[in-house]
Length: 264
Ligand code: BTN
Image (cartoon, rainbow, N blue to C red; front, side):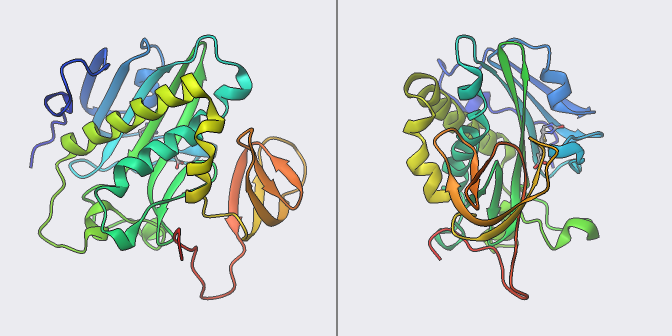
């Protein structure tokens, strides 16, 4: 097993990674990327203090998964449009992962940017704004097959979803595929705007039409509850007639039911 990850041999010579940094062990690639110029990609084999959304931690064992951060230039883009970038990143990750998964295991997007397959989390995204740069941190479960008890019922990986015991995904190739789709969607987002991405994001939306409860972090108010009306043109989540700009959504499931996959 090699601990080194290097996507560069899998990318065309002109591909716009300005600087690729690999660390065997680091606290968090998001922290490492914070002061880097746009076009930098930082990847690690293992993180000792991986960060998740809403102050959660992101478990980052060595040798199995991808943990990386991409620094994106957002100079000249309005704050409202910048707030939609995490959804563009979620769409890009789904584009790349769909091609690596069996057809019956299509990835879906749980607003704002959890990537789930069959109700289990395959990837998490944590974006933060640093002046005129966005640091987009992405964690993908690639070859991990056993998870700690507290997340075991909610997590999955490319390997588990492949249904094949002998398969081992090449993390460098998977990272290259993710960087290609992130760059394609970043360009579309910057040139044509979030609205141009919304129809495809809506197709991946796992919450629309479901009864949800959203722990809001955009206000001190009580949770928003109701039937989800989908993702609005400004990237907010429509819940029972309200717009929610930030928070964590939970589907109110009847006992025994699972979050649906797209198209089911
Ligand atoms: C979430 O779902 O809560 C977001 C998880 C984001 C994890 C990635 S792993 C690479 C990058 N570095 C971090 O510390 N976090 C992100």
